[in-house]
Image (cartoon, rainbow, N blue to C red; front, side, top):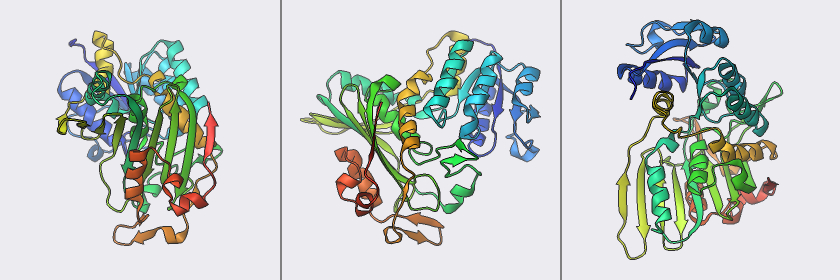
Length: 387
Protein backbone atom coordinates (compact mmCIF):
# COMPACT_ATOMS: atom_id res chain seq x y z
CA UNK A 1 0.00 0.00 0.00
CA UNK A 2 1.11 3.53 -0.79
CA UNK A 3 2.21 5.70 2.11
CA UNK A 4 0.00 8.61 0.99
CA UNK A 5 -2.60 9.77 3.51
CA UNK A 6 -5.87 10.69 1.81
CA UNK A 7 -8.04 13.51 3.14
CA UNK A 8 -11.73 12.69 3.54
CA UNK A 9 -14.90 14.71 4.02
CA UNK A 10 -17.89 12.93 5.61
CA UNK A 11 -21.35 14.24 4.69
CA UNK A 12 -23.87 12.99 7.24
CA UNK A 13 -22.13 12.12 10.51
CA UNK A 14 -25.14 11.30 12.68
CA UNK A 15 -27.35 8.20 12.58
CA UNK A 16 -25.62 5.62 10.38
CA UNK A 17 -22.94 8.24 9.81
CA UNK A 18 -21.58 7.42 13.26
CA UNK A 19 -20.48 4.04 11.86
CA UNK A 20 -18.53 5.90 9.18
CA UNK A 21 -16.91 8.14 11.80
CA UNK A 22 -15.69 5.06 13.68
CA UNK A 23 -14.49 3.43 10.46
CA UNK A 24 -12.62 6.57 9.38
CA UNK A 25 -11.05 6.67 12.84
CA UNK A 26 -9.90 3.03 12.34
CA UNK A 27 -8.33 3.86 8.97
CA UNK A 28 -6.84 7.09 10.33
CA UNK A 29 -5.12 5.04 13.04
CA UNK A 30 -3.62 2.93 10.22
CA UNK A 31 -2.28 6.13 8.66
CA UNK A 32 -4.08 5.82 5.33
CA UNK A 33 -6.76 8.52 5.67
CA UNK A 34 -7.39 11.75 7.58
CA UNK A 35 -10.81 13.19 8.40
CA UNK A 36 -10.47 16.72 7.01
CA UNK A 37 -14.10 17.81 7.18
CA UNK A 38 -17.62 17.02 8.32
CA UNK A 39 -20.70 18.32 6.51
CA UNK A 40 -23.74 18.52 8.77
CA UNK A 41 -26.57 21.03 9.00
CA UNK A 42 -25.76 21.38 12.71
CA UNK A 43 -22.06 20.98 13.60
CA UNK A 44 -21.06 17.99 15.71
CA UNK A 45 -20.20 18.74 19.32
CA UNK A 46 -16.96 17.50 20.85
CA UNK A 47 -18.92 14.73 22.56
CA UNK A 48 -20.22 13.46 19.21
CA UNK A 49 -16.76 13.17 17.64
CA UNK A 50 -14.83 9.97 18.42
CA UNK A 51 -11.52 10.61 20.17
CA UNK A 52 -8.48 10.70 17.94
CA UNK A 53 -10.10 12.35 14.92
CA UNK A 54 -8.64 15.76 15.69
CA UNK A 55 -10.65 18.87 14.84
CA UNK A 56 -11.99 18.44 11.30
CA UNK A 57 -13.42 21.53 9.64
CA UNK A 58 -17.22 21.63 9.84
CA UNK A 59 -19.67 23.27 7.45
CA UNK A 60 -23.22 22.87 6.16
CA UNK A 61 -21.98 23.78 2.65
CA UNK A 62 -20.71 20.55 1.09
CA UNK A 63 -19.13 22.09 -2.01
CA UNK A 64 -17.36 24.82 -0.04
CA UNK A 65 -16.06 22.22 2.42
CA UNK A 66 -14.61 20.10 -0.40
CA UNK A 67 -12.89 23.22 -1.75
CA UNK A 68 -11.48 24.42 1.58
CA UNK A 69 -10.21 21.01 2.72
CA UNK A 70 -8.91 19.82 -0.65
CA UNK A 71 -10.32 16.38 0.20
CA UNK A 72 -9.79 13.57 -2.33
CA UNK A 73 -12.67 11.38 -1.09
CA UNK A 74 -16.19 12.26 0.02
CA UNK A 75 -18.19 9.75 2.06
CA UNK A 76 -21.89 10.53 1.56
CA UNK A 77 -24.26 9.20 4.23
CA UNK A 78 -27.16 11.63 3.94
CA UNK A 79 -30.93 11.22 3.30
CA UNK A 80 -31.60 9.11 0.20
CA UNK A 81 -33.07 11.94 -1.95
CA UNK A 82 -29.87 14.00 -1.56
CA UNK A 83 -27.47 11.29 -2.77
CA UNK A 84 -27.37 12.14 -6.48
CA UNK A 85 -26.82 15.89 -6.13
CA UNK A 86 -24.13 15.49 -3.48
CA UNK A 87 -22.31 12.79 -5.47
CA UNK A 88 -22.35 15.04 -8.54
CA UNK A 89 -21.14 18.03 -6.50
CA UNK A 90 -18.14 15.94 -5.45
CA UNK A 91 -17.58 14.51 -8.93
CA UNK A 92 -17.52 17.91 -10.64
CA UNK A 93 -14.77 18.93 -8.21
CA UNK A 94 -12.75 15.81 -9.04
CA UNK A 95 -13.46 14.26 -5.63
CA UNK A 96 -13.92 10.47 -5.46
CA UNK A 97 -17.03 9.15 -3.75
CA UNK A 98 -18.17 6.45 -1.34
CA UNK A 99 -21.96 6.70 -1.63
CA UNK A 100 -24.12 5.00 1.00
CA UNK A 101 -26.81 2.60 -0.19
CA UNK A 102 -29.37 2.82 -1.67
CA UNK A 103 -27.55 4.97 -4.23
CA UNK A 104 -30.71 6.82 -5.30
CA UNK A 105 -34.51 6.75 -4.81
CA UNK A 106 -35.30 6.19 -8.51
CA UNK A 107 -33.70 4.68 -11.59
CA UNK A 108 -33.57 8.09 -13.30
CA UNK A 109 -31.73 9.65 -10.36
CA UNK A 110 -29.37 6.65 -10.24
CA UNK A 111 -28.57 7.03 -13.96
CA UNK A 112 -28.01 10.76 -13.54
CA UNK A 113 -25.56 10.01 -10.71
CA UNK A 114 -23.76 7.13 -12.46
CA UNK A 115 -23.47 8.97 -15.80
CA UNK A 116 -22.30 12.18 -14.13
CA UNK A 117 -19.67 10.40 -12.07
CA UNK A 118 -18.43 8.51 -15.13
CA UNK A 119 -18.26 11.71 -17.20
CA UNK A 120 -16.25 13.42 -14.43
CA UNK A 121 -13.79 10.53 -14.40
CA UNK A 122 -13.87 10.01 -10.64
CA UNK A 123 -14.12 6.70 -8.79
CA UNK A 124 -17.41 5.87 -7.09
CA UNK A 125 -18.03 3.03 -4.65
CA UNK A 126 -21.57 2.18 -3.51
CA UNK A 127 -21.79 1.22 0.18
CA UNK A 128 -23.12 -2.35 -0.03
CA UNK A 129 -20.70 -3.63 2.62
CA UNK A 130 -21.82 -7.26 2.15
CA UNK A 131 -20.31 -7.19 -1.35
CA UNK A 132 -16.92 -6.61 0.26
CA UNK A 133 -17.20 -10.02 1.92
CA UNK A 134 -14.63 -12.56 0.77
CA UNK A 135 -17.52 -15.04 0.89
CA UNK A 136 -18.93 -13.59 -2.34
CA UNK A 137 -16.05 -14.66 -4.65
CA UNK A 138 -15.77 -17.92 -2.69
CA UNK A 139 -19.44 -18.75 -3.32
CA UNK A 140 -19.06 -17.82 -6.99
CA UNK A 141 -16.17 -20.25 -7.17
CA UNK A 142 -18.23 -23.02 -5.53
CA UNK A 143 -20.98 -22.40 -8.10
CA UNK A 144 -18.52 -22.38 -11.02
CA UNK A 145 -17.00 -25.66 -9.83
CA UNK A 146 -20.45 -27.24 -9.81
CA UNK A 147 -20.45 -27.86 -6.04
CA UNK A 148 -24.27 -27.73 -5.91
CA UNK A 149 -25.00 -28.73 -9.50
CA UNK A 150 -27.00 -26.45 -11.78
CA UNK A 151 -28.24 -23.23 -10.15
CA UNK A 152 -32.05 -23.10 -10.03
CA UNK A 153 -32.57 -19.79 -8.23
CA UNK A 154 -31.55 -17.55 -5.34
CA UNK A 155 -33.57 -16.70 -2.25
CA UNK A 156 -33.08 -14.01 0.35
CA UNK A 157 -34.60 -13.72 3.82
CA UNK A 158 -34.56 -10.87 6.29
CA UNK A 159 -36.69 -11.01 9.45
CA UNK A 160 -35.83 -7.97 11.52
CA UNK A 161 -37.63 -5.92 14.16
CA UNK A 162 -37.90 -2.15 14.38
CA UNK A 163 -39.63 -0.16 17.09
CA UNK A 164 -42.07 2.57 16.14
CA UNK A 165 -39.35 5.12 17.04
CA UNK A 166 -37.37 3.86 14.02
CA UNK A 167 -39.90 5.54 11.74
CA UNK A 168 -39.53 8.82 13.63
CA UNK A 169 -35.72 8.93 13.50
CA UNK A 170 -35.75 11.33 10.55
CA UNK A 171 -38.44 13.22 8.61
CA UNK A 172 -37.93 10.94 5.58
CA UNK A 173 -38.03 7.64 7.52
CA UNK A 174 -40.75 5.27 6.35
CA UNK A 175 -41.72 7.62 3.52
CA UNK A 176 -42.23 6.88 -0.15
CA UNK A 177 -42.27 10.55 -1.09
CA UNK A 178 -41.67 13.80 0.72
CA UNK A 179 -42.45 17.28 -0.61
CA UNK A 180 -43.01 15.77 -4.05
CA UNK A 181 -39.60 14.06 -4.08
CA UNK A 182 -39.07 10.28 -4.14
CA UNK A 183 -37.66 8.74 -0.94
CA UNK A 184 -38.64 5.03 -1.22
CA UNK A 185 -37.45 4.11 2.29
CA UNK A 186 -38.88 0.58 2.43
CA UNK A 187 -37.72 -2.69 4.00
CA UNK A 188 -36.27 -4.03 0.73
CA UNK A 189 -34.77 -0.75 -0.46
CA UNK A 190 -33.01 0.38 2.72
CA UNK A 191 -32.55 -1.75 5.88
CA UNK A 192 -32.61 -5.09 4.02
CA UNK A 193 -31.27 -3.76 0.72
CA UNK A 194 -28.14 -5.90 1.23
CA UNK A 195 -30.24 -9.07 0.91
CA UNK A 196 -31.50 -7.89 -2.49
CA UNK A 197 -28.12 -6.69 -3.79
CA UNK A 198 -26.26 -9.77 -2.52
CA UNK A 199 -28.88 -12.17 -3.93
CA UNK A 200 -28.63 -10.51 -7.34
CA UNK A 201 -24.82 -10.57 -7.22
CA UNK A 202 -24.75 -14.31 -6.44
CA UNK A 203 -27.23 -14.94 -9.26
CA UNK A 204 -24.77 -13.26 -11.63
CA UNK A 205 -27.30 -10.48 -12.21
CA UNK A 206 -25.82 -7.30 -10.74
CA UNK A 207 -26.25 -5.00 -13.75
CA UNK A 208 -29.43 -3.35 -15.00
CA UNK A 209 -29.48 -5.35 -18.23
CA UNK A 210 -29.39 -8.61 -16.23
CA UNK A 211 -33.03 -8.08 -15.11
CA UNK A 212 -35.99 -8.97 -17.34
CA UNK A 213 -38.93 -8.92 -14.92
CA UNK A 214 -39.87 -7.93 -11.37
CA UNK A 215 -42.89 -8.84 -9.23
CA UNK A 216 -43.55 -7.08 -5.95
CA UNK A 217 -45.79 -7.57 -2.92
CA UNK A 218 -45.57 -4.58 -0.60
CA UNK A 219 -47.40 -4.43 2.72
CA UNK A 220 -47.16 -2.60 6.03
CA UNK A 221 -48.17 -3.22 9.62
CA UNK A 222 -46.86 0.14 10.81
CA UNK A 223 -48.56 3.48 10.28
CA UNK A 224 -46.13 4.56 7.56
CA UNK A 225 -46.18 5.18 3.80
CA UNK A 226 -43.58 2.62 2.81
CA UNK A 227 -43.45 -1.17 3.13
CA UNK A 228 -42.26 -2.95 6.29
CA UNK A 229 -43.27 -6.46 5.17
CA UNK A 230 -42.59 -7.18 1.53
CA UNK A 231 -41.21 -9.54 -1.06
CA UNK A 232 -39.91 -9.26 -4.56
CA UNK A 233 -39.16 -11.79 -7.30
CA UNK A 234 -36.71 -10.79 -9.98
CA UNK A 235 -36.36 -12.79 -13.19
CA UNK A 236 -32.84 -12.58 -14.56
CA UNK A 237 -31.79 -12.53 -18.20
CA UNK A 238 -30.48 -16.06 -17.58
CA UNK A 239 -33.98 -17.14 -16.53
CA UNK A 240 -33.22 -17.52 -12.81
CA UNK A 241 -35.69 -16.40 -10.15
CA UNK A 242 -34.28 -14.27 -7.32
CA UNK A 243 -36.87 -14.01 -4.54
CA UNK A 244 -36.20 -11.85 -1.47
CA UNK A 245 -38.62 -11.61 1.45
CA UNK A 246 -38.24 -9.07 4.21
CA UNK A 247 -40.00 -7.81 7.28
CA UNK A 248 -39.29 -5.33 10.06
CA UNK A 249 -42.09 -6.94 12.12
CA UNK A 250 -40.47 -10.27 13.02
CA UNK A 251 -41.56 -12.27 16.06
CA UNK A 252 -37.99 -13.45 16.72
CA UNK A 253 -35.54 -11.34 14.68
CA UNK A 254 -32.60 -13.22 13.20
CA UNK A 255 -29.62 -12.72 10.92
CA UNK A 256 -30.58 -12.14 7.29
CA UNK A 257 -29.23 -14.55 4.70
CA UNK A 258 -29.08 -15.37 1.01
CA UNK A 259 -29.71 -18.91 -0.22
CA UNK A 260 -28.34 -20.24 -3.54
CA UNK A 261 -30.40 -23.21 -4.75
CA UNK A 262 -28.77 -25.88 -6.91
CA UNK A 263 -29.89 -29.16 -8.43
CA UNK A 264 -27.59 -31.06 -6.02
CA UNK A 265 -27.44 -28.83 -2.96
CA UNK A 266 -27.58 -25.32 -1.56
CA UNK A 267 -25.33 -22.57 -0.21
CA UNK A 268 -26.51 -20.34 2.66
CA UNK A 269 -24.70 -17.04 3.20
CA UNK A 270 -25.33 -15.08 6.41
CA UNK A 271 -23.92 -11.88 4.98
CA UNK A 272 -23.62 -9.88 8.19
CA UNK A 273 -21.47 -12.64 9.70
CA UNK A 274 -19.52 -13.54 6.51
CA UNK A 275 -20.55 -17.12 7.27
CA UNK A 276 -21.30 -19.75 4.62
CA UNK A 277 -22.92 -23.19 4.88
CA UNK A 278 -22.46 -25.58 1.94
CA UNK A 279 -24.92 -28.49 1.86
CA UNK A 280 -24.72 -30.94 -1.03
CA UNK A 281 -25.60 -34.44 -2.02
CA UNK A 282 -23.23 -37.19 -0.78
CA UNK A 283 -21.34 -34.81 1.55
CA UNK A 284 -21.68 -33.67 5.13
CA UNK A 285 -22.44 -29.99 5.72
CA UNK A 286 -19.39 -27.72 5.41
CA UNK A 287 -19.25 -24.37 7.17
CA UNK A 288 -16.84 -21.54 6.39
CA UNK A 289 -16.13 -18.10 7.82
CA UNK A 290 -14.58 -15.39 5.69
CA UNK A 291 -12.95 -12.00 6.08
CA UNK A 292 -14.19 -8.79 4.56
CA UNK A 293 -12.64 -5.89 2.69
CA UNK A 294 -13.85 -2.53 3.94
CA UNK A 295 -15.26 -0.53 1.04
CA UNK A 296 -13.63 2.77 2.02
CA UNK A 297 -10.30 1.00 2.37
CA UNK A 298 -10.86 -0.58 -1.06
CA UNK A 299 -11.56 2.86 -2.55
CA UNK A 300 -8.32 4.18 -1.03
CA UNK A 301 -6.44 1.15 -2.43
CA UNK A 302 -8.04 1.84 -5.82
CA UNK A 303 -6.72 5.41 -5.80
CA UNK A 304 -3.25 4.60 -4.47
CA UNK A 305 -2.51 1.16 -5.90
CA UNK A 306 -5.04 0.60 -8.69
CA UNK A 307 -7.05 -2.11 -6.88
CA UNK A 308 -10.35 -2.93 -8.58
CA UNK A 309 -13.40 -1.27 -7.01
CA UNK A 310 -15.68 -3.84 -5.39
CA UNK A 311 -19.07 -2.10 -5.85
CA UNK A 312 -19.27 0.20 -8.85
CA UNK A 313 -22.44 2.12 -9.76
CA UNK A 314 -22.98 -0.19 -12.77
CA UNK A 315 -22.72 -3.14 -10.38
CA UNK A 316 -25.82 -1.88 -8.56
CA UNK A 317 -27.97 -1.38 -11.66
CA UNK A 318 -30.08 -4.50 -11.08
CA UNK A 319 -30.71 -3.45 -7.48
CA UNK A 320 -31.83 -0.04 -8.75
CA UNK A 321 -34.26 -1.78 -11.15
CA UNK A 322 -35.82 -3.32 -8.03
CA UNK A 323 -35.98 0.10 -6.32
CA UNK A 324 -37.69 1.46 -9.45
CA UNK A 325 -40.25 -1.39 -9.50
CA UNK A 326 -41.05 -0.69 -5.84
CA UNK A 327 -41.30 3.04 -6.58
CA UNK A 328 -43.76 2.41 -9.43
CA UNK A 329 -45.81 -0.21 -7.55
CA UNK A 330 -49.08 0.75 -5.86
CA UNK A 331 -48.57 2.14 -2.35
CA UNK A 332 -48.06 -0.67 0.20
CA UNK A 333 -51.31 -2.17 1.44
CA UNK A 334 -51.99 -1.84 5.17
CA UNK A 335 -52.22 -5.22 6.87
CA UNK A 336 -55.62 -5.85 8.49
CA UNK A 337 -55.56 -5.09 12.21
CA UNK A 338 -56.03 -8.77 13.10
CA UNK A 339 -52.81 -9.59 11.20
CA UNK A 340 -50.49 -7.78 13.64
CA UNK A 341 -50.21 -6.80 17.28
CA UNK A 342 -48.14 -4.41 19.34
CA UNK A 343 -45.54 -5.58 21.87
CA UNK A 344 -45.97 -2.69 24.31
CA UNK A 345 -42.68 -3.08 26.23
CA UNK A 346 -40.73 -2.93 22.95
CA UNK A 347 -43.16 -0.51 21.24
CA UNK A 348 -43.04 -2.49 18.03
CA UNK A 349 -45.56 -4.17 15.78
CA UNK A 350 -45.31 -7.89 15.09
CA UNK A 351 -46.91 -9.97 12.34
CA UNK A 352 -47.55 -13.49 13.71
CA UNK A 353 -46.17 -16.19 11.41
CA UNK A 354 -44.06 -13.78 9.35
CA UNK A 355 -40.73 -15.36 10.37
CA UNK A 356 -41.80 -18.67 8.84
CA UNK A 357 -43.17 -16.99 5.72
CA UNK A 358 -39.92 -15.08 5.14
CA UNK A 359 -37.93 -18.32 5.45
CA UNK A 360 -40.39 -20.22 3.22
CA UNK A 361 -40.18 -17.55 0.52
CA UNK A 362 -36.38 -17.86 0.37
CA UNK A 363 -36.69 -21.66 0.51
CA UNK A 364 -39.27 -22.06 -2.25
CA UNK A 365 -38.63 -18.83 -4.24
CA UNK A 366 -42.33 -18.01 -3.75
CA UNK A 367 -44.13 -14.76 -2.98
CA UNK A 368 -46.23 -14.35 0.18
CA UNK A 369 -49.48 -14.71 -1.76
CA UNK A 370 -48.25 -17.98 -3.29
CA UNK A 371 -47.49 -19.26 0.21
CA UNK A 372 -51.13 -18.65 1.13
CA UNK A 373 -50.71 -15.64 3.46
CA UNK A 374 -54.32 -14.42 3.67
CA UNK A 375 -53.32 -10.76 4.01
CA UNK A 376 -51.14 -11.00 0.88
CA UNK A 377 -53.93 -12.67 -1.09
CA UNK A 378 -56.33 -9.92 0.00
CA UNK A 379 -53.95 -7.15 -1.07
CA UNK A 380 -53.73 -5.93 -4.64
CA UNK A 381 -52.26 -8.54 -7.03
CA UNK A 382 -48.51 -8.31 -7.55
CA UNK A 383 -47.43 -5.71 -10.08
CA UNK A 384 -45.28 -7.13 -12.86
CA UNK A 385 -42.75 -4.68 -14.23
CA UNK A 386 -41.00 -5.81 -17.39
CA UNK A 387 -37.74 -4.02 -17.97
